[in-house]
Length: 95
Image 1: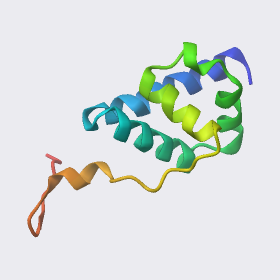
Image 2 (image 1 turned 135 degrees about the vertical axis):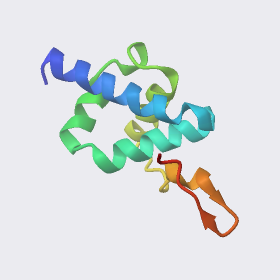
Image 3 (image 1 turned 135 degrees about the horizontal axis):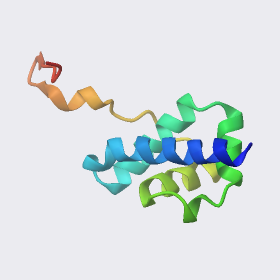
């Protein structure tokens, strides 16, 4: 991959991690890893694993990549809309 492509992967990994920061570091790492594992193609994963990601990613994204690079595949994580459930109601936060 080119330098521009790896920069794009770094940016995407950090953006994914930023979306999960509110659920706490450990859960955010697993949710970020789950997202990357499910939605990134094998070439993208191979490129970020080969990168010096520990120096270029925030801690959640770096820990998620390290988790995947070690061969771990997280269980599916709670989806973002799960927080809106109240009792038997499935409220939406959409306007």
